[in-house]
Length: 118
Picture 1 (cartoon, helix red, strand yellow):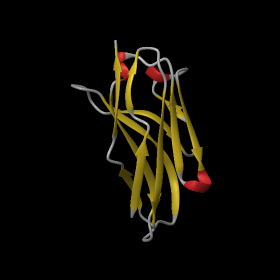
Picture 2: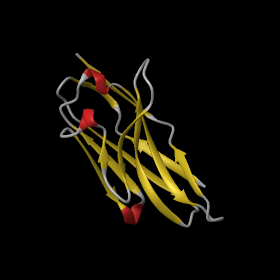
Picture 3: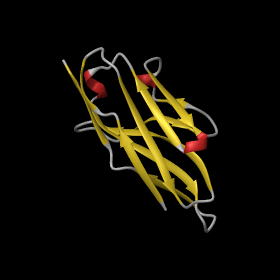
Picture 4: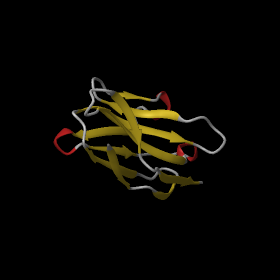
């Protein structure tokens, strides 16, 4: 029902910046929200930023990351600045949609690697 095109990951040094992008497409009635999770090595997956009814950030990224959505294109961006080694991980775009059967479902992209070197 939902497919993703994710891009923008890569290798950056401490203090650098990256912008992640995610475009969702498919057949669903409505988009309820989009955002980003990440999973660092040896750590539990955490919600980084979400958009939809409200915009929320993990405490660890407030003031450094910004999520921006383009509702007309079902696209979401994550602008990351002042990156730290603890930001390293695989970043997964997600979309929460109401599908053709009026069910609320969540989907995740394949992920993109972000590595911050020190």
